[in-house]
Length: 159
Image 1 (tube, rainbow, N blue to C red):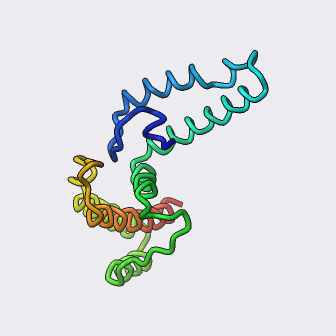
Image 2 (tube, rainbow, N blue to C red):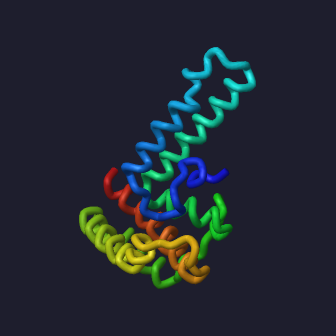
Image 3 (cartoon, rainbow, N blue to C red):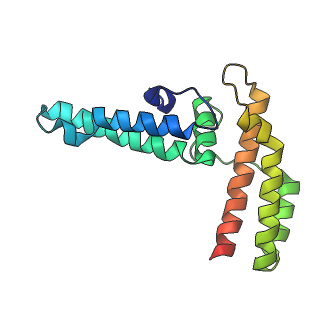
């Protein structure tokens, strides 16, 4: 069972936060280990495992980048330790960013992240799992890896 099925929500890149919260509370009432103290050892173990999965799913759904990653994994287009080859022109721009002053680097990286998002904004906001094409998903995958790279630069400039 995938996280969307667990939470009984449609596959989406923009999760309805109210529905997510409502379903999370219902799932925890049903599976939280504290409500299974009188159950058999196997039932307690199942409840603990299910509760853990619910918490992992919630963490994924609360983070848009993690939701994108999860959907791409469900589609078989992204592997956990995948070595994704980013375009050389992007890597050159990132090298220039890395070599600039931290304040300038942060401003440029933030601006670049905004530009990247604008390129896939429509895909993310109007995602339809039933009609999405592989090409669209591959564009989303490239966005995910570029954003991940940018996040490292931004994290470095914050420190």
